Image (tube, rainbow, N blue to C red; front, side):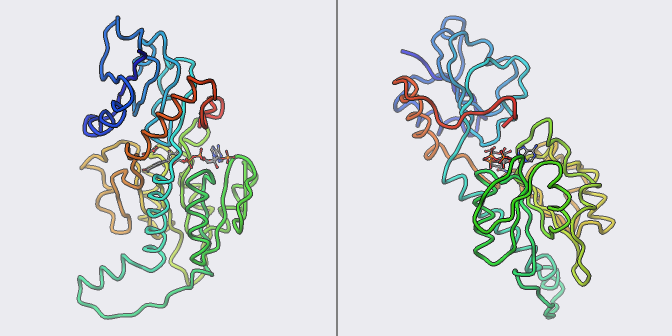
Length: 311
Ligand code: NDP
Ligand code: OXD
């Protein structure tokens, strides 16, 4: 019987193993003999070169919605990569974005500081209708978060590689759309994939193109995409010199974020440990198993990664 190789982080592997083993013969390691029997690989950050050792590999399943952790392997075999599309993950990510947008919008940091100081002081509050949230990456996750924010009354726009039509969300795209998109954005939400085109895109120069309204404390950035989308030295500088009012980062150039990194100690930055969305095997494994069966019956796979686009 064909086997499934499971290669995910140790702490997560037990649940994935349990769920996959209900229907498939799953291995966590292999020798030369078993390597020939492995048809599918379910992976998160596989070791470079690992998948190239599987001569009969047919499909790679990514445990994450981002696939940069797979595409960075220089010896990656040329087989389809199926990426996660899950209502559950989308819901998690939407909650995270809404939570962080609302906390920045409703001056959460300021009121927590006042509470610590025992200070009773009401501040003026702009209505959501006056605030523009710009979402970089209007894919599965960006669209869902954008619609939720739209329903709350925010003005929402999105920036993507190609034009997108999402009800009530202004679409900007490509190189030419970036400046007008940024010029109208107060709160920037980053939900892009990491590709050669997007690496380092959140830099000091780009932050300078965000909207700065009189009587408003300044722009805010929320990155829940990938750490290497941002230049952390630039974010540190912008949060220190006032180019940015506040930020939330869920993802970092190096993870876990080293204890010595000054980002931990910035009062106007919220750090979360790549916790915006979690790939839950209870939701994802049934979809993967269905896809394996569909593939074997010649019915094709779900959405696969386009390697030339890099996502
Ligand atoms: P999708 O593939 O559905 O959407 C990607 C979006 O980014 C699309 O709108 C695409 O444009 C746009 N895009 C890609 N490249 C460019 C470019 N060069 N210029 C402009 N726009 C571009 O991805 P998902 O929404 O599913 O996920 C987005 C990312 O979120 C993942 O890649 C992952 O890195 C991250 N993520 C983070 C998690 C966390 O816990 N922090 C959890 C899950 C995901 P177009 O529409 O034209 O194709
Ligand atoms: C993902 C992630 O890409 O968890 O799904 O970051």
